[in-house]
Length: 270
Image 1 (cartoon, rainbow, N blue to C red):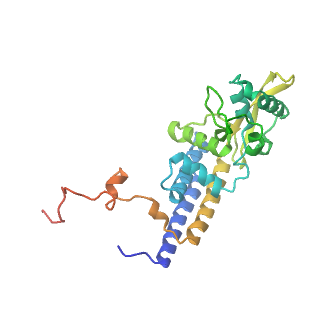
Image 2: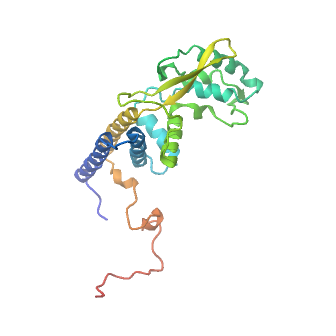
Image 3: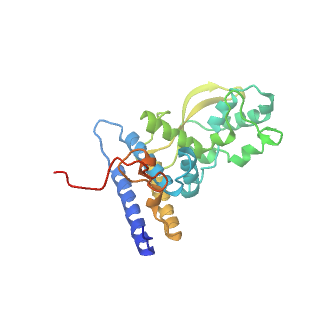
């Protein structure tokens, strides 16, 4: 096969980017009567991010490439923040003494959150703030017992992937938040009124990733991927398999050549 020159790669990049721009535009304008269009948009937007992520990291696992791609290309300021309500909920489920100090700290921090309106992710602590308080064993950060949860799993980059799993595999939003068409920033909704162990009246907080946020994230990821492809003169289609079969190995003639052919040379049998 003849190598592709730079001008051809530039055309391929333009075609790739244009195709995804059309996808995003079509998703933005989708309208389904008597249905929750935001849920359908979310499902489609995360599939766009999946496709872009595979172009950049084709050999990584779906979770690794999604998380790393969003982290590197999404310009998401709070990507590395730890979800405080998730962390509190996790620490409620262990009585391990090693977590006492961290538990006391995060319980007090969550009790400071106000109710009655959206709480944005700037209230969540950065992972470095929590790491400095997280217990260690032999120099390594402990997993939360029973749950076997690592600190990284509580970052928003990983939580967005978990959110993506519910959307894609179950066609549902796990927290059923009430985001509107105008919401472009993730937020928490407060619900209920409870008396906490720190002596304050508190709410539970549900995390919401709005469709508007996923739309903006898709656009940002695409723009940054385009810059990467141009800078590195990379054909974005190299990461994808094309052919007649759904199993990728069967379309890869170089790595898995045909040894005992069924199909001969083309001929007209009519």
